Image (tube, rainbow, N blue to C red; front, side):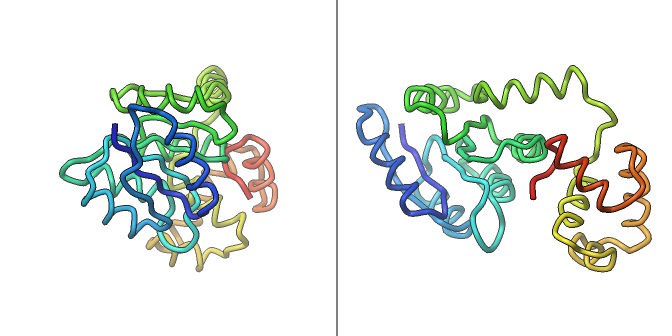
Length: 206
């Protein structure tokens, strides 16, 4: 089974490579620290499974890179391997085409089983992630759209309406409309309260 590692921390990549090196049926065929390196290397090496971190420094993040990888002619399965576990991160990754979502704190055996399941095209989630998703399904509350979550994430970074509009290629009027919907769904009436509630509910992270 051919694996490709995408993580912007060399020490993390080395640690995962060392773990996988002890498995007779797994082989690391490439590594990348950025989205561009990842897409180019994966297209060349054609691995079976990509282990994808969500934070890749400058440039596209792991979610966008997952979307690009899954669009390749010989697209491998993508298993997200990260420290982040907010609802927004999980949903965005799965929407982008990831077949699984595993936390870096998981035991090695759990990681190996997740890799094998991903290679078979099976959906695999860390127990903690699965618990979050089950809780979300049982008590979803008013669902935020992907665009509304993107706007909340920019709000959390201190962006104003004009900056948000520019970043998302939409008009300021559209931003204001989305904010009205967000406030209504979260039961708040200020930007600060919206961000606070979103963080508390695990919808976004600071």
